[in-house]
Image (cartoon, rainbow, N blue to C red; front, top):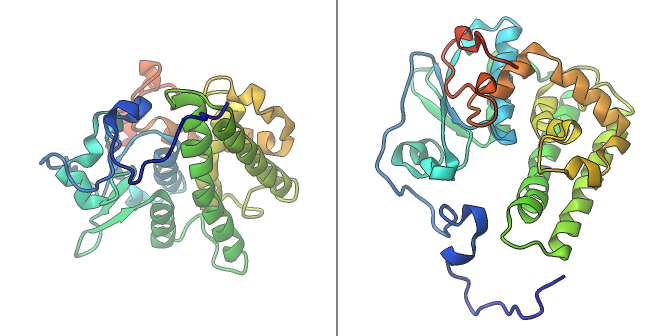
Length: 283
């Protein structure tokens, strides 16, 4: 039920007592809160991230590039603990002024360049390596589905996920509002995947890499408690077919555990510096 007693203030200000699980990091100001440099490894690509759905997009992209034979895609992956506010260190803010994971430093050229926002990183790497993004007349379709996912994620994560799983109180209106939008997005994908093998068409592309880390956990029942059940994810048969197909890919399987800091220890990989780091891991 809606809170009938709530009246918006004349001006919204920071209220640390009413922020729920993320009250310690949610503030209405940007910028660094702590002076601290980022670690750096030997590879051209330095990734600072966490294995949330948005972070997994990029580690999957790197692992898929390596799986496809692009040796130049070797990377160092460093875990950024967003629960502890590590995204607000001066080093991280220098790579991503928006203080969100993932963030990438590309040192392959004469001058290092930063890339932030998961979709921008996927596009940057696809163009750099000439992989997982077509150059023919199917390119606009792939880019459309890529940006469809980028625009959809806030409704699923910050909308449904927040109000259902993380908000300090559960209210009917926001949960139902975002639950229905999440179901609609699954239906959009399901109808598309009834027409084509992958979101962008016949080939696996960055559009699939963007959407799969968000959608596959729903199919597997590994996100937001019993969300799979009451969202009736089993109704989306074409999404389930695609999810199983993508989840079986070796590059996707490896990418899912990079920068993972929870669950079984054998399925965690806090840092990734070479293929040898996966030895003994379950993925």
